[in-house]
Amino acid sequence: MLPWVVRRTRLPLLSLRCVDCRSESATTGEGRFRVNANGKLLDVWLLVRCVSCDRTSKLTVHERAPVRSFDPAELDGYHTSDPELVASRLLDPLLARRNRFTLDWNGAWRLDTPSAWLDEAWPVQVEVVFKDPVPVRPERLIAQGLGLSRNEVPRRIKCDIPLRRPTSAGFTFTVMQASGPPAASPRSRRTARG
Image (cartoon, rainbow, N blue to C red; front, side, top):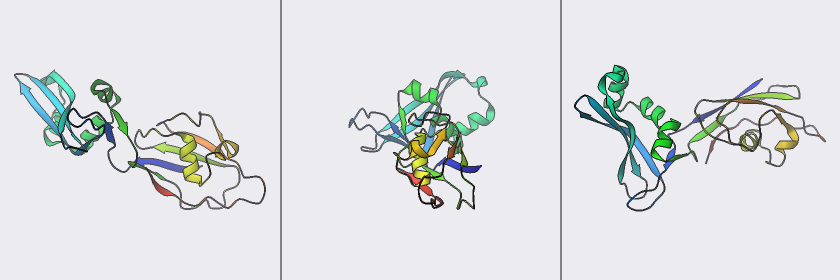
């Protein structure tokens, strides 16, 4: 079974309307948290910046949470704006729902495939693993990875999940040999999607 890996190359942009310029795109930039203490309660926000006018906004991560409810390492991560904590909070679907934004993954991920299909016998099985929750249509991913047209994918691919419905969960598929003259082995692809 051949491994394919989908991984992010940077944090995605946020589809979030700016209150000043009405642009609909924001970024976390370097990724910073703001922590505010009010007695024994804490508010934690993730700061985002409009890509058009640079206006800073706050996304609520925790609101009026008791200090003792935080793991000390997590609290330290908020104070130091730990990059891994920034990424995990930004990619948390609950944060997106609470703050009413979606993630724009255009240009923020890549597909890594093996350098060669060394004499693989047809049909070939491929396992796709997602290192980050990048929503992508399997049909599009497979076409990109194999260098096929999207019209050719349904004829050459056997898969147990819908090919046209976005997923960010791992899956496997089988590549059938093309009918007609012998097909050349798909070339290696390490491509960014944008």
